[in-house]
Length: 340
Image (cartoon, rainbow, N blue to C red; front, side):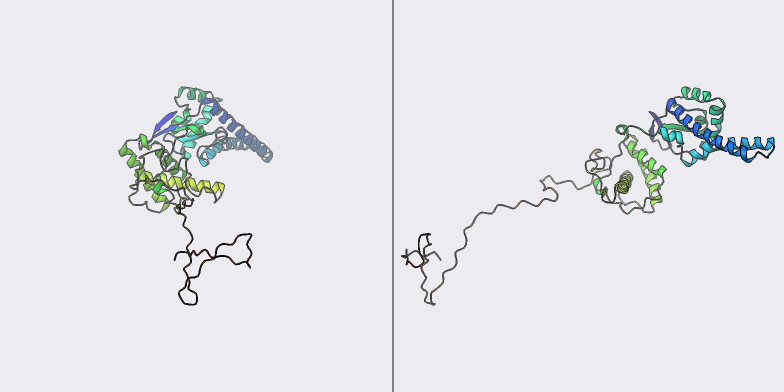
């Protein structure tokens, strides 16, 4: 593991590529380049057979420079440090501060590679990589670059703290299409190392990244929200959109519960806790109906007594019939009247 310190005092943990993986990546790139150069040379031989020897030699030199030197430079510039061999073995060329390379870096590496790799058959590059503490060849030293491993075990990746729960889903309408990959990388690296930075340096770094993010999105940051919490909430929204884009609109509608986005419990006090604290009273599970309270049994109400013919005389209630009695048989009265 190699620690690189950026200009903002942020330490980046990068895994420099070792000599075996780099040698295999260079061999694969050389095989592809030599195959392309052979094809171009054969095409030039058949198409320039009528030219003199000087013209043929000039075209051969031009083909060599364009294919074996200009080709790798163009590929590394357009792919930001990923050639075919490096892509196959999970490697990438980055600057000393961890950022993506540009044309000048690829140009210096390609020009030095002609001497290190092509003219000396890789002997100088191997010796320089073995002597360097981070496995850099001369082209990397002069260009200020480093070849690192992109594929690391999932269990050893840095943990990005989640935002406070009161910020989850607040930036669903934010336009993130203009934010470049380099800014996302810088924000993620800051969030993974924010607990290890000096408070003043970390706050200044968060403000600068938040200002850059606001300039790219075109929407101002909410008032009263700490810069680190704002960055974490926007990163969470981007991850949620990636999940929805991958698995469809029905999945990833919110922050996953129980994972890296659940409530910020894994990093207490990372962004500041909201003033509202959860109640200690037991609560019903979400979606379940409340249990009905027990109701004491009450006897049915007795109908009010009626008068016969308006004389005020209360009729005598008949006794309940038994299965063996007949409706035609008269029944003796018991003299019992229900209470009013």
